[in-house]
Length: 73
Image (cartoon, rainbow, N blue to C red):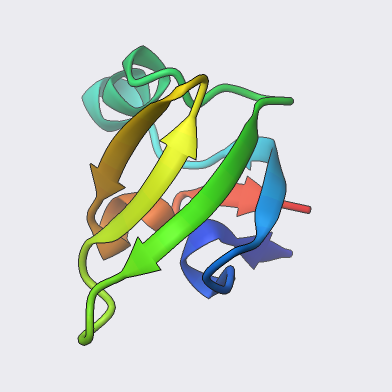
């Protein structure tokens, strides 16, 4: 499956599943990224880290490692 890191700038994607476990998964969920939520990819830094997204009406920056744990469709 495709993960958030593979999404292109300007894409609106839907979260299918969160990978990872424990504190890392809880931190991602606390940021509002849960199954079924739509994410708009605003910007990606030149080296791919971080990724700036819009989720639930606010802007958020994610590291590549965290973005790889978010499975999308």
